[in-house]
Image 1: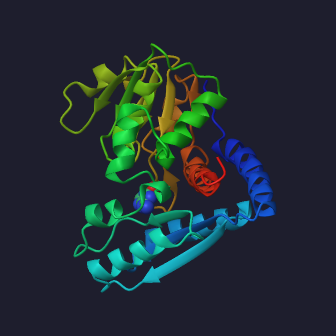
Image 2: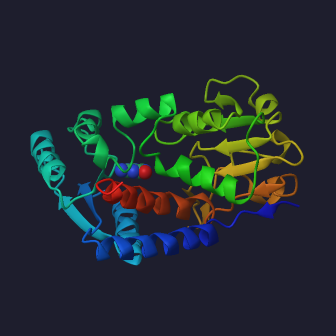
Length: 282
Ligand code: GUN
């Protein structure tokens, strides 16, 4: 039976030490501030943004929430980001995705000053991650690496399988595992014999957004299983991409949903914001 990875607990201790760091920064006249831009009326995005704001308040970071109507045009958004880039009181800038379809996400994200790119989504941040010379790490993969570290999972030389190739999770996750000397395979919807590949893994990260996608017969005994999915079932319950009940009988360590990766993502955003605020004194 697997040991359950407690993302809430790890997250809580990191947030507590961040809060102490923020208090010290304030004594030195630095007041960490995160600008969070939400465009339009996507209900899930509104919840994510509210949670980010709550986490800011909990750690002593000032959230500057900017909510814009669905009809906002690309130029208006670019002008706003330019203003925030130049505002020395703002240390981090986050544009909640998805943006309305008439706005280019790529153009908007890439207009963020890389020194304030706390999501690590700009081309410069991604390039730095590829080379292993990063300033910021994307929050979900960074949170997973922290969990693996906390539970003393050795990555070097291990077979690591990432299922999902999104720019936000799958691809950067693969790079971080590779930077930690894992032997990394990335699977996706066109992968043949998926079970054969996942069954080889010492560490599996699943980020496909499909409820109960990873079954027990796709996992080897003793594997470490990390579930990034957050899916809402018809009965209203949340569930991950991993069939938790059965897979936890075979895995050595497993993240639950909720309470696994989720809390770590926002905590890493707070960590990146504190790091951005400290850059002037480093
Ligand atoms: N939408 C879904 N996940 C994320 C995230 O991590 N950051 C931003 N900015 N938008 C998202």
